[in-house]
Image 1 (cartoon, one colour):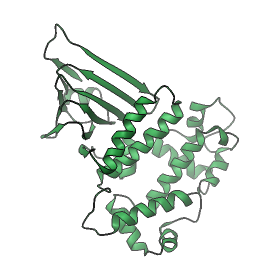
Image 2 (cartoon, one colour):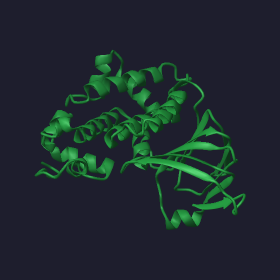
Image 3 (tube, helix red, strand yellow):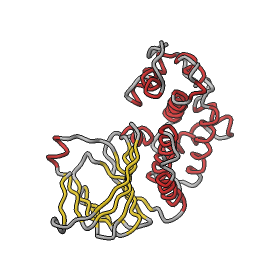
Image 4 (tube, helix red, strand yellow):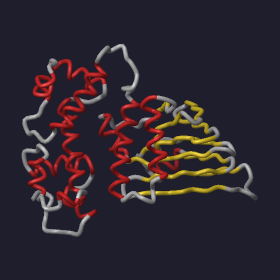
Length: 292
């Protein structure tokens, strides 16, 4: 990015940064400044990841895709660095910015195109997101990297629910309610290899079409949701010492996958690494291979 200061001879600012290999949370404050990311910078320094921006005090103005958003406490924005933007703030502004890998948002929303959206954080689910982010910052000295990532992942999940509007009534009637129940059921039974859209619908007493419509409203399908939850279950277990004794094959079968190769293929496509490599990132190497 480029920077433009109101006063270059006497500028004051500060940041507090916490990060892992996956997420980064920064709280910052500064005197009046404008940040700019140009088309040339997006070409020469590609960055597809998202930033969740939450003002704590003061006002910020975001300009992107010919839109202008005024952000103050109680609002926020999920913006992408893959397209040019301008972000300016006044001298009293203080804010959080959470860096989120693009696949963590696009995978949940079943999309590959850039996304930029304003979020209401004054009440309901939005307020929960804002409070969680503040607490994540406050507890930074007490959290392990795994715990930090776990909280950040839950935050991203809630942000994605905000993006699709699942915290507000919609003309679709009960579809958001159906989706919430379906997601909860899938998460609780995701290790069952027989789980699919039909078994979910039958167990909950709804038609398969109703389940499909509810998930379609959220931008996904039964099979995509089940695969996503299974991959997240494996990811959590790869980083948990209690499952260190299990081979990748054991983890695959215990998480609903038909084989270790099916798991490895889906896992690499979703997270960019094979299960073995993710395990080694948090534990000493062993004899596992990507498909064993």
